[in-house]
Length: 279
Ligand code: ADP
Ligand code: ASP
Ligand code: MG
Image (cartoon, rainbow, N blue to C red; front, side, top):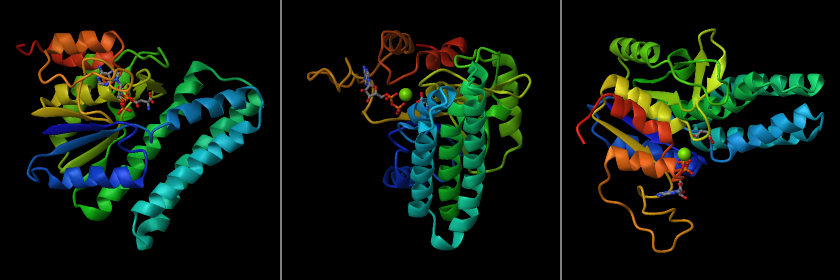
């Protein structure tokens, strides 16, 4: 089994999502794939902005919501064949309604707890995984969508939740043992506590979701697709002479990420190191 994670830029619009579908189609059709996706680039920030407006009783939250709504609806329209659009849009609207109601609740109460904050930001990955799954489904057979919140279990540290590795590993293994789909799409970043309440793994946490799955299922490879071609000696967007590092140990990759290379979310390496893979 192979795990592929696509970050915010990779799913930012219909054109990029189509590229992902082509990457998935081009791979070895025999190997099972787990596809972890981030929110459409910038959505998490817009959700946070919406939450903050709503908390302050500022009706600007309605505009932020509308921006998110329009963007996702347009993405569906561009990706899904017309005869299948209404069903997919119906499902999308259900998720969007839940977001709108939650924002309305925050605005009425003028209260935004960290628990509600996580609920709000989870919509980014819930929407993106729904769109990627439905697009794949129109082109390939045997594709399923699994909500990570049903298997990745954390403590109650909303916004930076700590994963209960034992329970999570066992949930992941038993889910994949019984699942016969060729491609399983999952939202990154989101998880749930023991009571089923939505938690998140920290900003950039989709990398970690993918690593948790890859480690638990002993994947043959974990690929992290993003907007730069690998780990560089420095942030290539800021440092002109930066170049991609051809080979890097897990230890060095972890250090680089801890020192600010956001190309990899720091805890991502942990599940691998815990397994004591030879370096
Ligand atoms: P994604 O949304 O796909 O998770 P991120 O924005 O989180 O992508 O991470 C990719 C970004 O990390 C790159 O666009 C780059 O600007 C930045 N970055 C910072 N340091 C490094 C580094 N050492 N190597 C590669 N990218 C880096
Ligand atoms: N969407 C989340 C964020 O923007 C998680 C991720 O992209 O990894 O932080
Ligand atoms: Mg990232």
